[in-house]
Amino acid sequence: MKYKRILLKISGEALLGDQQFGIAPEPVKMIANEIKKACDMGAEVAVVVGGGNIFRGMKNSVKLGLDQASGDYVGMLATVMNAITLQSALTQIGVQCRVQSAITINRIAEPYIRLRAIRHLEKGRVVIFAAGTGNPFFTTDTAAALRASEINAQAMLMAKNGVDGVYTDDPKTNPKAKKLENISYDDIIKNELKVMDASACSLCKQNNIPIVVFDFKQQDGIRRILKGEKLGTYIS
Image (tube, rainbow, N blue to C red; front, side, top):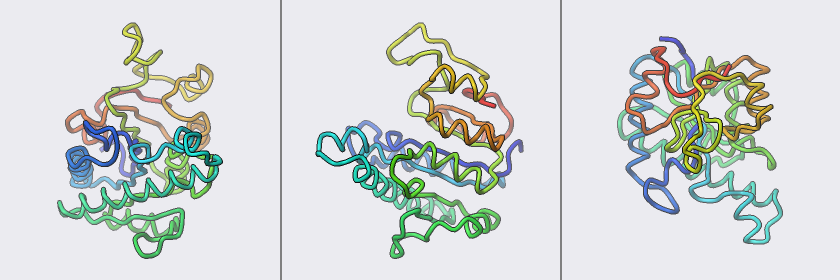
């Protein structure tokens, strides 16, 4: 197995399915099953899930007249909803799972404590990190890079919705966009490739955490990456 401990970043949009809003059962079950396959291999899996299927901070804030900080906090609460839903799906298929929230919500999630999270992973439990970093003005991409650094993850896997890697342009709008098999952190930042935030990429570079960008709909995607297969785009 190439990576023992990984952090999986899932966009909130991945939970939409064919809907325009909310959480569809099919993608949640599929993601839970893919995580289970990784756990069955002996991998230690941490997860950060976005909240864009429920509330997009910047976009919705403007419509509602919220300042950005308030909008970001609402977005953090959306990630908690997604985390609890994914936890339930994992529990139903026999995977032990804990949700740790950067915002204190004692009734439904543990507070984020780094050493406790690592202990859960060592015991074979999946840990879902909710509420981003707990601070406004930071995206869940940055939260994922931060948590990956804190738990000493050996790789960060970015599961994209319908895109199987990093392209020179948006492949959904530009059919001539070329897929990049390998790329450096600096190229992501310098060319402003919108696969993740520059701050998240910088954090992974600083802590030497490779990033694999892949399509979460690919069958056995996580397991194949763990086995060392070339899938998606490798950023290092």
